Length: 380
Length: 259
Image 1 (cartoon, one colour):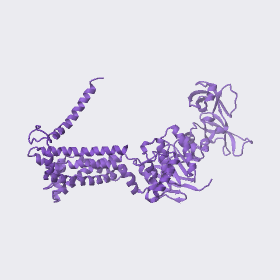
Image 2 (image 1 turned 180 degrees about the vertical axis):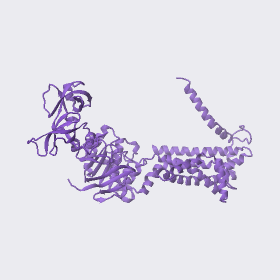
Image 3 (image 1 turned 90 degrees about the horizontal axis):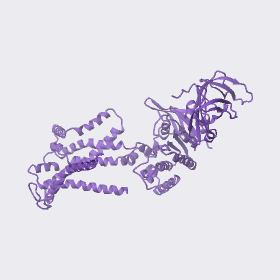
Image 4 (image 1 turned 90 degrees about the vertical axis):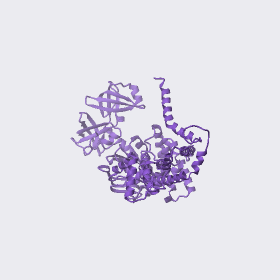
């Protein structure tokens, strides 16, 4: 993969009055990358997108597209295009007129036969052949979304900025459009910067994901990294790892068989649970740690079942939620602790778990994901 | 449920419409009968219509009315559009005051506006005539056009302009290709409301008109001082029917453009 920077943010800050929407943000996105800004509403992800597109001007810092500083250029002089959350199709123009809008501007000097050809190609790309003469209000939400995409792509931007483009679509259509967007991105091979609050969307499409909070990145990495090894409590919680504990290292084992970079540690949580985990060499007895365990990693079996796990406890089922292919079990460990487990529904059926059942619950040391504590404030 | 209520409702509705349109109907009917005085039907005639077309005073008055109404529509709609932009799009010191001040002429009695304009014109020694009427009409039409256009503006999606700029249109092109086309229904509505607003005005015009600058309402008023001539009925009928025809044509073209 080529490593040319397509979009670069250098210590960008944007304030609205007293509110800092984007806080000293730096970022480099490579050419052809599918990059996602993921975060809850108000985290600054849309503002970041608008700063790249030129619809907002930063209070400090620089924006670069293709290595050129574009900080002071208006949106119409930037080689980027946006697909807006509400599509922003021009209601007074036909679909053809919408897609051709940018091409027909005098500043672009595209001859009319060429415009016709490019619009036809764009309609084909988004599978809307034959819709050119219609008006936006005669199209479904999904079709309007694809028109917005075609309108932006027909200008062959270096960067396509997508602001929650699938937010208004129903679940099934959203899945189909995720695949569609990926296909189109491969076909046109331009950088996509995608804003969403939906972790599934971010996971399924992106090359890299940045989880945003309070105008800055909480964690940046591949979808797999973010999902499996969230670094902070916020990311762990946002990615749905609902089992988050705080504790202290009480023992470090000098196990020679372990790889040099990690060691086996024992942690006691604030609520008195003792857990075996893997930790860095810098950890010693007394170090404060937070850790998360993904619900899928937590196994639940009946008490008489013979099985092994690094961490295994006697427990009681206190809640059960059927979610289709998986079932979520809320399990109490002693009096002060509870943990969420997500097991395949077929396993649940086999054991026929019910609330109040005495079970055993467990997970392996590797499944304890250590979070950086201290700097991170607990979520309200 | 009270089963009589649908019937009561239709009787009520009928009464309201009768009350609104019966007087107009009476006027239309009497415009076609030769009776000069009183209110009796004595056969069908078009002679009052012929008389209207041959009456130089009415023609002159109509000319004056149009000479005032048309520029009033154009100028007050243009100023209203700009005012709407300023008030809706920009934040500046005293904006609330300006916007509030815009509503005042709409609720102020015409009599007060008329007298104050007359005093004002006299104090700056402006001769009363078409110009003074025109200025008066423009000034009382601007609040109307501004409010109608602001109402439309509030319904326009601002991201359309973001989208236009993002696609490569500069501010000027965005204004012409996106903002104004979006605003057009509001601008047209403002113009359509302003025309009768100006054309029909009597009270204010009465104060600020001079010799030889009688508008149609002023002329009609001076005609009926000598008794209601059926010519006035004929003129009234034409004034009712002409806009109806325009509306019907407008609706026809509107329907056609949709299908």
